[in-house]
Image 1 (spheres, one colour):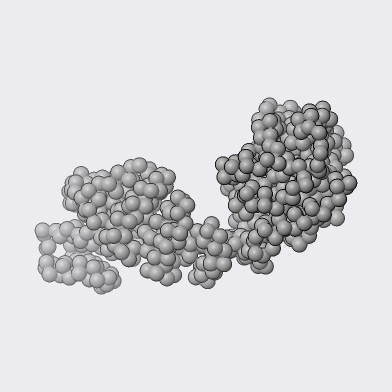
Image 2 (tube, rainbow, N blue to C red):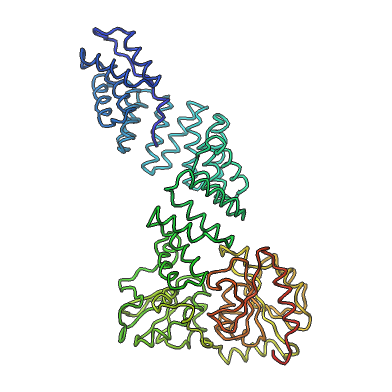
Length: 606
């Protein structure tokens, strides 16, 4: 952090003024404090022309050169003053400020320490030492320095604010917020502190309070670009998407060369299902060509719009984005295969990379890879092993995390559509590509008992940790209002949320097996015994579709990209029918339609 120039102490005056009067030296100091730097410099130059070792003039000229941008020259001048007067705390403190600006943070800390040894209650030196320690990523030591500055100077707003930043970086968000409140109580027009407080509140998911804090910062500093951008993020999490777009618009108007607001604006427009999302991501990439998130998010927009060819190419940027790279990327010595090189006679590892539904959807490509003459090893999470054991095209099935055999090249499952140049006309979806285990089907048939009425399998919620869960999942109490009595209902949920347990227990016509479903082979057997599976967008929807079972998928207004837009069928799964929310983002019309069509379903067809 740059030192606060307003708080640089005035230089100590040499007791030996030589031929210069005390009034002339004080005049130079006064000019410096008024910001008349060139005029002050002229006086110092005159003094030093007569007395090159005049310590006061050397020190003040060092400050002036520092303020005018000549950092190296400034450091030399102040160091020369220190060589003459080695016991002046202000000299060491100001040398530390210059060294910090030069990026010599270790040296700056040493200089501040020298100042503090001379003058232990030097609050500004403790504060600036905290700033230098921050740059060195020594956060605990920085906090201790700010503590000492505050102990000496209890109304030190900047120290409270910077200590809050350190606490925030250490993950102590509540503590940081307390420091920010103290800073703004002392200095109400402290825009940076309001902005940082908004960031901490956002981390604690106190989003409304975060927005208020951002708006306080903007009221003080109307051109605060980063705060407009961060306010947009908070509004986006609050699902106030139009307001979020407006906040991003303010950010990019103020600073058109800032990529992140364009990228986040594209995400918000996508969530609104509005045109312009791809163009916003494009603009982000123009500003910052290596912004992986913008390229990846544009790929999602393209895939959702059915532009699969260009979408798959951009989708490879997921490996350069921080979250996907950290959580899913695998590092192998063997080369990545994306379809360009022949693989006949070679062994290729196909590996799952994201959710279970993704693995079920894209494991179909194993057959196509094998048809190129390769020996295919497929690595998948344990819950899918029994289900995929007989998948056509694979030579060996491995559980994720177990030692791998020798292979020549590898490919993540979601990169296979790129390798095969898949478009809407060439999706490999001609028939069911998974099958259920007959023995498990028999076990589950006995478990269900004699079939008296048509059976409907149900999945109303997915993983609570999914980023779009609040849009894709449905409360069981709402779903139950639209279930006709003429059917037998079977819960295909392994886990039931606390909020749904009461509704499940009260409804006597729903069979629920929960943790008796050991893995997806059990779920597949249960799917096989259903006349129709009704599911929100979860892995069970993919499973039922891959089995070729009649499946009705309930989709939010802005669905996952694989379900495309404005169609009630899926080119990935011929047996799936899609039921979509409209712009009102209301499940009730969707469920009314499901109820009507379920009621009209001929019993003999089930």
